[in-house]
Image (cartoon, rainbow, N blue to C red; front, side, top):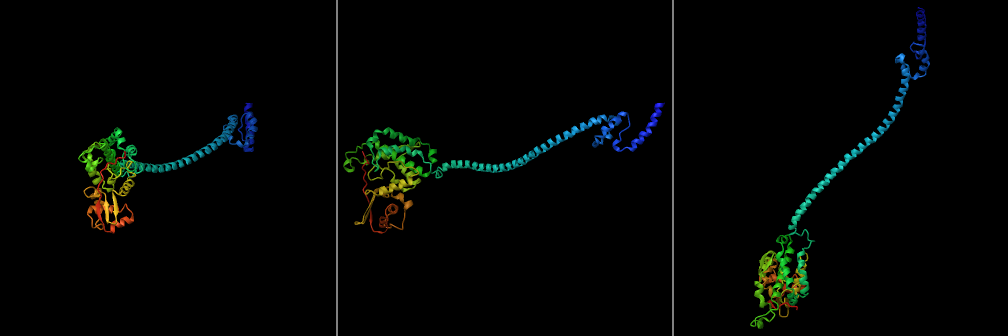
Length: 402
């Protein structure tokens, strides 16, 4: 009972003490241990929020306060990584900003698509390859590739350079001993693929047929060399006249691209019709002294125009082909200019009726042609002076340079 009376006596005093004390000291009344911990609670004054925690467990909140200090430590630790992480993430965001330039890179890939558009022109380059199929046309207009020479013509170079001199004279005697080499060359014309020939430009085709004509003419004359004329005709034509073997030459058959030809066939089909260039007739050898001189090099498409013009000038410079006698008012022309030979082949390109009115159409065309290859003085004479035309007797003597 005494203990109870003491408690009831002390309680009012404690209540008065609690009410009179400041809030910091407002610790719950409990065992004397509470009074012992009151000064420790007064020290962590900034953490006054702890009074809200249960009174008997104040010892634990005091332990929790350091725990709260540890999160306070962790908070700076979190602040550090958070600061570093945003710093890292900001550059990482900057990296997406770089990825945005990467989006700009696809914008660069769009130019790459434009480059693919450029590749489409490269698809047009196959059209250039179709133009490489047009190189067949090119190869008709191989004008597109004029800088690429046709190698086939070079096959004739060795024979012509070795056995033909600059004046067009042929060493038939030596060439006869090399007949196998000459025969092998004629086989080259036979073995040529026509598709390859069709792919060539026009000038190379002309060069091909001139070379084929001349090489085969060399072949047939060499096969019949030396010429053995008839004892009845030798007094008329002479011992070395091509006319002794003229029939053999005209009847001679040869193969080109696996097709049979004779010399008159080639002249009529290609030189008179398909190509229609009278200059060609000055490139064809007749194996005679009065005929056009045989060139000691093959004709090629790249040099054809120059070669043909040279042939015309060389032919007209010979007195056996063209000369003027002003005193007698005569113009002498080679017999190949006659209408019955090649004269009429000049009409389509050089026919004219405004000048040379006293002459026949074929002779008019021939005279008009000649004015393009002689001096102005000679051309003026042909155009305005009075003269008569006379054809020179043809010399059929073989062009033997042996």
